[in-house]
Length: 484
Image (cartoon, rainbow, N blue to C red; front, top):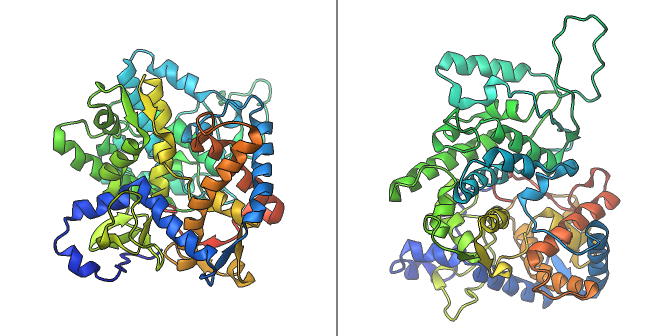
């Protein structure tokens, strides 16, 4: 992944001298700016100015029909939940939220929401690509290995022993264990549970680690996430949580661990501002003003996520020396912001904030469960990642101009990838309208968050499996999972 990319537009250096950094980043954090900059790139591609792609909107109806058919098969009553990390907690048809609700029952509604925010933030940040081989075997009654509990480490010797233990851990069983022979003295073992891979496996594994207290500094309150514990996380801890081993490899352990350490550091810095406990739950308190607000907007959620967690994104771009995260240069991005003003300092940069928007979508339900009304759901954009973007390529809506694009490996900063993602944002809005028409529902009945779940993401996975062994994306991107 490229680091510290800085490609300001014409005249940006002069304008930067008088523009506060906070204002510059504020423009690039607005969902309106995401849509406006992506629309500018899409218009240029539609005008046949791109050497990478062209757009074939005649294929949109067929893509919409596929998404609508899959949506009907998955949700016959069209009662579609949001595209959210909470869907992965339902893997295998297991109602893990009910289990969590029982654990949190003694708490007030606000404290339950704080615990749900803690779980959501950590789980989303652990949701990078897992690799095709990795599997997680769920065993609800099995305790976590000691290596997965960094808050209990007391010395460097403990750490080194746990590193050795985690490195030697075997892969999870791939078949049901045989029953012990009659009269055997072996202790009873928890019954092996089902195995999950990819995002579902990461979701279930992070859920199990959370309820077991892997992120808590208080043994009496396991269902919480404390910044001090996050700062101690390392690849050994994650290896133990995720049952990873040489025979059950999980890609990107170091990157995930580093991201959670930076999360811990960012939360500690944020907590100093207003005395809020250094937990991801501080986002709930910021959004609701300590639980006193009864209504927030989806754009508010994204704003607070980007403001509080901005320092954790070290793998994206820098704009005028300021870490900007999932923001990339493109020659056609322009300076439009979707509002009355235009911001010349940020001209030429297109923001996506994919993982932050995924997190924002995932925080909507905990807010609503706490009795908070969330408005303006469609302010957030479609997620420009390889399932949604892959659907549009595989369905023939986004058409690569050369087959060599399928043979290359790209970086997130490469112009072709920035362009693909921008096209994905714009065309998902158009596809959503066509899907609603197919299903005979309005935007109010089926907001974009539900179209994605219904939906485009699942259709992207489905069509990829039809087109390629292993179901990988049509374009290959080298990424550590912390941005794309």
